Image (cartoon, rainbow, N blue to C red; front, side, top):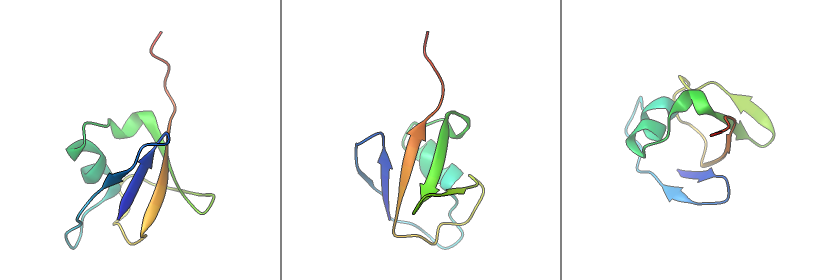
Length: 63
């Protein structure tokens, strides 16, 4: 699977049952601060990973 957080690309070797939450946390991304999209459809962070690639959009400000 490929995770694309704001234009960057992260490759992730998934294990059966891995969720987006686990993948994000493993790469230092707080799941509550992003939206996950697959072909324009929002995915929940606790969903098991089945897609080949997703877009990750940061949603929180750092101000």
